[in-house]
Length: 189
Image 1: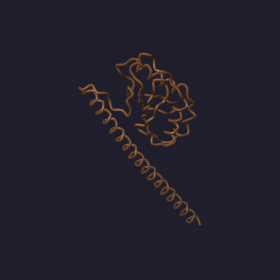
Image 2 (image 1 turned 90 degrees about the horizontal axis):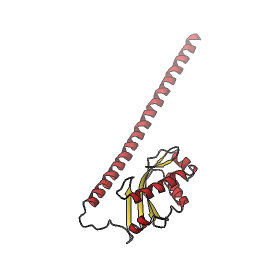
Image 3 (image 1 turned 135 degrees about the vertical axis):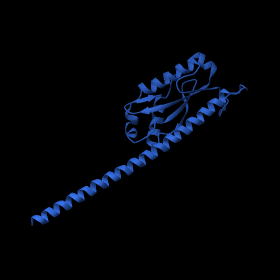
Image 4 (image 1 turned 60 degrees about the vertical axis):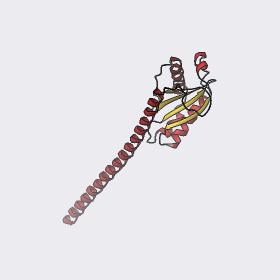
């Protein structure tokens, strides 16, 4: 009887060890799959950044002085990131970013942000009266619900304020592109 109990205990230990090994192997497979997906997303971001850099270089090397292509005849300004020679444009973009960061309820994106995602890159086109012309995702977060929540955050702002007079004399529409970092709050980089 003691041998049978010892044999059962030994078999139970072996089974527990096999199950533990199976769990470890499953965890390793899941980690490898996650890393492969992450690497693919990073490659896509790298391609997008390279394309944007090439477009910026092409725009900087233009000698004709022709305006950047747009879908309309409106005078458009672009700000990709936080720096530009036009201080009025940078100041207006910072005011827009602060309004989004400070005047929104994080609850709008909280649930969607819990899902694994990448930091989306969003372009907001704002008319001179402060209304939003369009919202474009250059790089999606990979989570449809999060992208929709970001659109809702922007729509909830409704009006960003008219351009300052010096900026209004230069542009009819400004496109501001920022990376949205969403963790415990929303930050625009």
